[in-house]
Amino acid sequence: MTGQTDPLDPHVRARSTMEGSTRDLSYPPSPEPLAVAVYDNHTHLEIADGENPLHYREHLDRASEVGVRGVVQVGTDVLTSRWSAAVAAREPRVLAAVAIHPNEAPALAESGELDAALAVIDELAAQPRVVAIGETGLDYFRTEPGSGRDAQLAAFEAHIAIAKKHGLALQIHDRDAHDDIVATLLRVGAPERTVFHCFSGGVELARACAEHGWYASMAGTVTFKNAHNLREALEVLPRSLVLVETDAPFLTPHPYRGRPNGPYLLPHTVRAIAEHLGADVDEFSAQLSANTELVYGSWDAHPVAAAADVPGNPLDLSATAGER
Ligand SMILES: [Zn+2]
Image 1 (cartoon, rainbow, N blue to C red):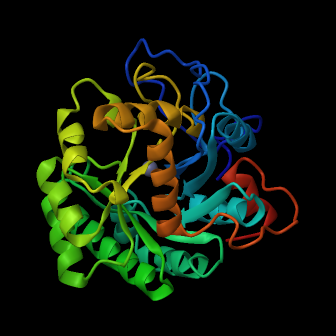
Image 2: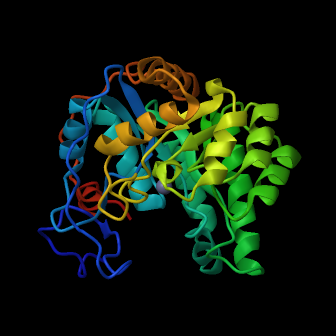
């Protein structure tokens, strides 16, 4: 299982360095700190990127220095969901979201392993610092019509049920699937706190969010020059429903698009949105923090365990825990 992993590499997975042959693989400099701190409500600290990937603690330290005081660390499969929960249990700046990603669900369904994987997610959801089920949803960009999409829908509905059972927030992955996501939420009933992670809709989806009280989490994409739909969406969204995220190591904000991302780059996204809305950056940051705590609760609500450190590589965690 671990044979393909370089033992010196602290990360289990790496973002492909093939996308764009001329990608700059160095981390951008830190932005000017925000005066009022915010949270990154969706990040993947274990996914390595660039020529010198940061350890998750280095990510958190760099974030703290620029006014990003906490993150929601998001799992995408059993291994990374376990890791996310383990880090959140020990690290005060981290809360966890756990799920089987819609791009992982079809293969697991095919091999008959999806139910067992969902049972692990249900079990992790009971931990006090696991505050969301996600990312889950539908990805029509990567999955063709047919059995793969059926598996995604079944997994999405199962995750919604787990979120409701445990009273947790839901983080939705929606790629080219706005209508079916909305229809599913309305059909089965959305959890009380439902977040469109990396909001990618326009005015129409923003109006649905406003109508139903769903949150729109803006990623670095909102800073891209061609992202007019996202900025138009912001204009119809109540500010009480706006969140921000990095989805690091992906979606690095302008002017560093394409380079490795980290929660410490979130201030670029916050400032770009505030500028677009004509809002005061400090007031907007305060609003974002209040919104985030309404969705996930306080990062201090459940104390962390003073247990041994969590390895940076999820594979090492499962090895030490002697898990199947
Ligand atoms: Zn993500």
